[in-house]
Image (tube, rainbow, N blue to C red; front, side):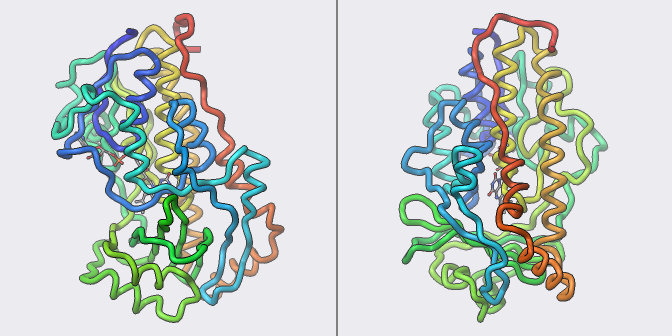
Length: 374
Ligand SMILES: Cc1cc2nc3c(=O)[nH]c(=O)nc-3n(C[C@H](O)[C@H](O)[C@H](O)COP(=O)(O)OP(=O)(O)OC[C@H]3O[C@@H](n4cnc5c(N)ncnc54)[C@H](O)[C@@H]3O)c2cc1C
């Protein structure tokens, strides 16, 4: 055993970190404030960078791996703006993007951990109260530990977008598709087991209250040439959340013996579908450093140096993508954007996604101790 770690928060990032640290030979406890380890949310897209990171953790999606075979971007009249060819991703990265139910992803992560390291119903109040060589603060966007380690750092801000999400059963062969309208994005992502995940991202003032989300969406999108209204009508439970993000990047992801990880470190708007993927990347990089270096300072210095630039760049790009995409409201600007997308060669429209996903995880192996961080 190389040392002891306590992970505060048992979401995607915290559980992935626990798996990685155990693989690196550390003793790990995961403290989760909720009474159980459960996922709030519907589906999630995992890009090839996250799939590679999961493989390094020893977590395989198996039959839950639902590759998106094809799809594209449409306008609100149902006209194609561009089409995506999954084969391009396969050729470049070995895999296309995959849609999975969040609860299933959490189940897979939990299955890779022994029960005795999981402590639900335990709220962490302060990093100082935790007795461990290494503390991983994976307590989400409204992280208490981030506020403790970076007092006075600006809180997450409202992105301008409110999001509705749901999962229902597929009745036919639905394709991956994103429909763009003024101030609106409607998305459909097929999942394993005959399910489909849909979302509606809408520009709206913060705290917009919607008494009956289903009725609201069905009225708002009546007549749209998108699968989403039909899927909404068949969905039992519709989730509705305002989207916040950490617009002011942190000056460091580490302090003392604590590493901030996942949304606690870099909560981003979901326009690139990378927030969860980045938290899995964080976990693998931290674990690989924990396997490699003999002292916690070197582990943390390496982690911060490797993770901060990439995750903060992706967060910035995600916010920019929202401004050019879903949040664009002026009809003239929307028309100009759509014309531009139509003119782009299909390969060019996915080049950014391929570049973003082209990330190779470090190996988590017990190597000969190296110190200091290099
Ligand atoms: C609408 C929407 C769509 C998204 N779509 C995608 C997508 O398609 N692909 C993608 O990769 N990402 C997506 N994301 C982002 C993704 O959901 C997050 O980045 C990811 O869940 C972050 O994981 P985390 O473990 O860091 O935080 P969380 O999942 O928030 O987990 C934090 C955990 O810590 C616990 N906790 C909090 N405080 C304490 C405490 N004091 N003590 C103990 N435990 C505590 C919480 O209960 C929670 O379980 C989306 C986000 C939204 C909002």
